[in-house]
Each structure stands twice: as structure tokens, then as C-alpha cells.
Image (cartoon, rainbow, N blue to C red; front, side, top):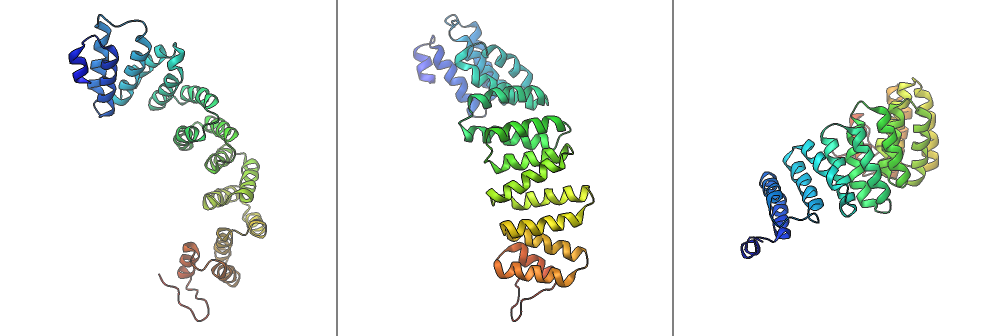
Length: 278
């Protein structure tokens, strides 16, 4: 590129590419300076301006000057060729500026445009949901989780976030309904769904109902993790014989399950004629 520019100082495309190379090579300030200097180049035309604004926005984002990025992305947004890239840049910039509502606005535009591209949606929704999960805006967390779930209902992470958002907003029945539905369709993140269910029943001080629900879930779905959870509850309630029976049943079904083995070691339980190794 440097050779190309040396041979033709009027090659604006080469300058744009060289600045991008600097940015990708972890030199965003150098990239920004090169791109910004192009505003004074005699051969810069209106055709180049939207791309130049987009590149400057990306440079600013990489350099950590996020408000500068917003200004440049807003200008690039006016050209349909760079619209989606500008929306993505704005979403990322607003996230960095802790302006989650504005970030969501641009994420939703992107999600509508890329609704068939599950990889894209996973890449950008998941970190946003995780951020909202640990923030204070519970309504926004629920709104975002609902949108993500509607786009890809088979995505277990999105379902888990939606269940957590329901819980955060006090919608315990909705959360439990979603948890129950996912036991039917997926083996993924069973522990996380179970922990959330435990939190719900603990919050409502209805541990006996949790035990009944676990028993029903195990009869229907047969997940070992449910049986382990039942055993833990039995130990907590002082029902030692019942707990041991549940745990040995889990061991017979899955003798190499780490949770089963760990709980057996903690409570000094050994199958007849066998030793459990740490």
C-alpha cells in the first residue's frame, strides 16, 4: 500500500486502506490521524466521504474515544451503502458510553436486517444481554431478552436470559414456564436453569413445591442433574436415607458424573463393594 501511495499520491482508496491496516494492526491513533488528514486532500470527493466517516468512526471506537465515534457514525449512516456498518458502530459506541437504551435501538435495527443470520445475532446479542443481566435496568433486560428470544427461540442462552429477566422483574410464573419448556427440548445449561428455579422457589419461600416440581421434572425428562438437586434438598431437610437413595440412583445411572461423585464424597457415601475416587 505504501508503494502504491508512493507511486500515486492521489489514490484516496489506498489511503483509506492503509488507515484500516493501521487500525487492525492495533494503531488506531495513527489510523485516525491518517484518515482525518484526508479531509484536506485535494482529490477527496463526495463519493469518498461516507466511507471516510465510517473509517474515522471505527478508528475512534478502537482508540476509546467513543463519543467521537458516534459523531462520525451518525454521518456515515446517511449513506445506504454503509448504513448497517454505521448502526453496528453506533450500537458498540453507545454500549461503551453506558447508553444502553440507545445501543438497543441500533441493535434492533441490525437484528431485523440480519434476522436469518444466527451467528451474527449470537455474537452481538449475547454480550449485550450479559451486560444488562448485571446492570440496574431490569425493564431493558427483559425487553432485550424477549427480542433475542423471538428471533431465535431455539437458542438456549437466549431462553436462559429471558427466564432470568422474568425473574429479575418478579414474573416468576413466566420464568418457571420457560424453564419447564426447555427441559423438554434441550440438555444445554440444565444446571443454570435449575439454579434459577431454586432461586425462584427460595424467593417465594416454597421449597416443598420446588421438591415436588423437581420430582415431576425428573419423571418427565430424566436429567441426572435434577436427581442430584433432589438429593441436595433431601440432605438439607435432614432426610438422609432418602438423599442417599436418590444419590445412589443417580450414580447407577451416571457413574462418571462429576456432580454425583462430588456429592457422594462430601457425604461419605459409597456403593456397596466400591470406592469413590477423588
